[in-house]
Length: 129
Image 1 (cartoon, rainbow, N blue to C red):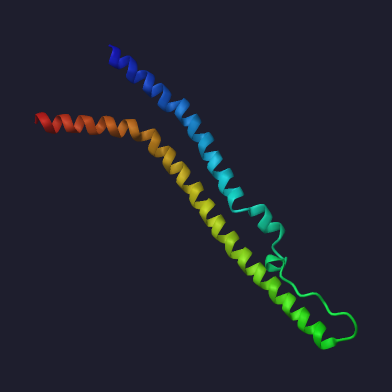
Image 2: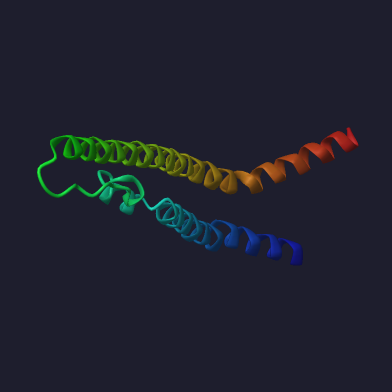
């Protein structure tokens, strides 16, 4: 009788409090990786030069110097866009994988008592058959 009471209390916890705790933990993981990869910052600074590397424009009339500085600053912006875009794509792939793994883990958690009980029954059947 006591073991049945313990098993019912466990199942009550397993399907109520544990699922609620899982949801909060899953939300915390998504929040953490969203902020860890700095998705907001990356999207806001997408078109800025990489690491603020830029050449100051020369003063006075120097078309060759101005053109060289312009080309170098454009290259630094392109490098910044490419690096941030790669970082953004990889972080979104990781968060998407996390979004797919979360429900799979929840489904596994929900069927775990059934699988364990089934394996016990199969084991006892094979032991005494």
